[in-house]
Image (cartoon, rainbow, N blue to C red; front, side, top):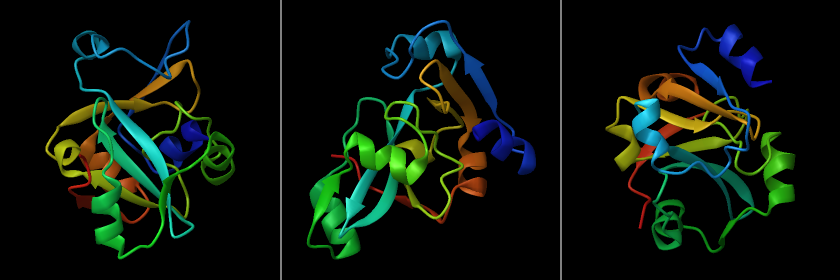
Length: 147
C-alpha cells in the first residue's frame, strides 16, 4: 500500500526494512539513521479523524486541538480505529498515503529537513523529506499542536 503510494506519486522517500519490530524505535536510532524520529498519531476530533505528525518524544495537546477545531470532544483513536481509518497498525502509520484524513504537521516537525516515520509495517520505517510530506499528505497543515 505505502510502496504503491510512493511509486504512483513519485515521492522521494525510502522504506527502511529491519529484522525487528520498529514500532517503538528508540531515539538513539536517530543518529544512525541521520534524521529525527517522528510519529503519526490518529485523533478523533468530534468524531472526524485527523492525523497528527509529532516529534518522537512530543505529545499532542488536546487543549490546542480543541481550540484549533473549536471542538467539543478530542480523543486518541483506539488501535482498532487506527487500523480501520488508516489501513495501518499502531506504530506503523506513515505520514503519507492516508486518503481522506486531514494531516496536521506540528510546527516542531515542519522546520526539519528529513525525518524517519512509520513505514507501513512494524518492521519498517520511512525516511522522507518534510517537503515531500507537505506535498503528498492529505490536506496538510502546519500547526503548533505539541504540549
